[in-house]
Amino acid sequence: MNSSYRISVPETMSDNLLQSLVELTQACNSHDSSSLYFDIKNRHREKRSDFFCFYDNELVGYLVLIPHYCKGIMNVKGMVHPKHRREGIFTALFNKAKDACICKGYTNMVLVCERNSEAGKAFTLSLGANLKYTNYDMKLDFNHYHYDISNQDDLVFRSAESHDID
Image (cartoon, rainbow, N blue to C red; front, side, top):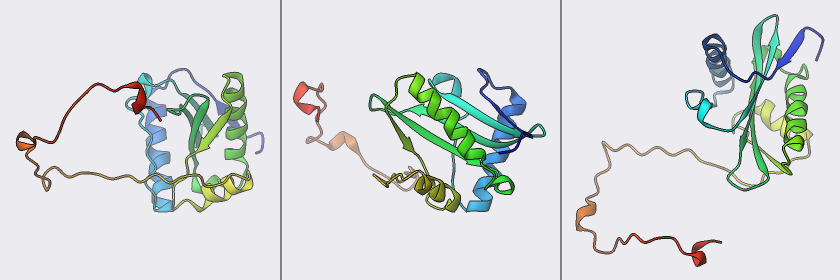
C-alpha cells in the first residue's frame, strides 16, 4: 500500500462517511455478485471497531470488528473497492485490526467471507485460514407462511436450566 492511502479509525461516523460506506458496499456487491451487509444503522449499539482506508479522500477499503458470541473471538468483515484491489489495502486494514484485537485480549478471529468474493477467499487462503463453518441467510416471507400457534398443545415454554448449556 503506497503513501497515498490513509487508514482511519474514527470514534464516530458522519453522515457523509456512512453514505460513502453504503456506496462502497454497493460497488463491491455489484462487482462480486454478492450480498455484503453492514448494519450501519445500528452501529452505535454494538461494541465494534471500524477501520477505513481512503485514497485521495475517497473511501476505498473498510474493515469492521464485531465481537463473536463466544468469548475471546472477534468477527472480521470487510471489503475493498474492486478498482483498488491487489494493492495491499485489506492487508493493511487487517494488520491494524489484528493489533487492536491483541490489545483487547482477543485470542481468535473469525474471517467472514462472502461466497462469491474471489478476492476475499484469496485473502483468507493467503493467511492460511481454514473453512470452519458456513452461514446461510434465510428469509421467511410471512405473506406465504401461515401457522396457527393457538392450537398447539405440544409447544411449551420454560426457563433455561443449567443442563441446557452445551
